Structure formats: structure tokens, C-alpha cells
Image (cartoon, rainbow, N blue to C red):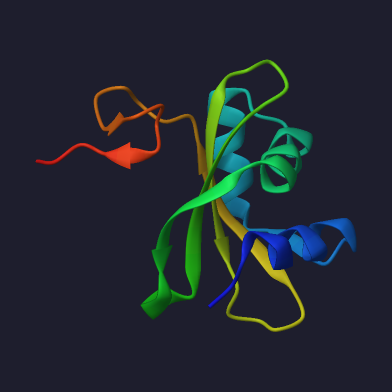
Length: 102
């Protein structure tokens, strides 16, 4: 299981790549690559998807807007940023850190 400290180590050592999907989604929300990196360095893991080797990280960008970043850790040498989005109040509660029940 991956930890936020290990993710930060990958980021600090520039061992990460963006999926094109992450860049596309970021542009839709006005999120810059630097915003994603900042959240990975300051945020916390709020969900784990071990069957897919992925985690969901919550943090706030420098402008205090909440951001969710999904990372894939299936490669032992790199972290992949698979998608990113600004969470919706309709789907999230507790400061965008818990999914609302359906």
C-alpha cells in the first residue's frame, strides 16, 4: 500500500507523469500542472483503490480552491497523475473529503 510520504518522494524526485486525461480535465477547470503538484505535496489520501493501484488525494490549491488528484502507483519507478478535478458540493461532504451516500 502506498503512503502520502512515498508519493511526495516521487514528486520531489520528479518521478511522475501526467496522463493526457489529467491535463484535459485540468484545463477544463483552470487547474495548472503546478496546482496538481502542490496538492500532491500538501494534501492527504482520502480514498484508496488497491485493486487498481490508485489513490485519491485531497488538498487545496494556493488559491484555496479544493482539488482532487488521482494517482496510479502501478509502476514502481513512477507515479502517474491519472485525473484531476475540482470536487462538487453535490457529491462530497466534510470539506470535500467524504463522498455523499447515494
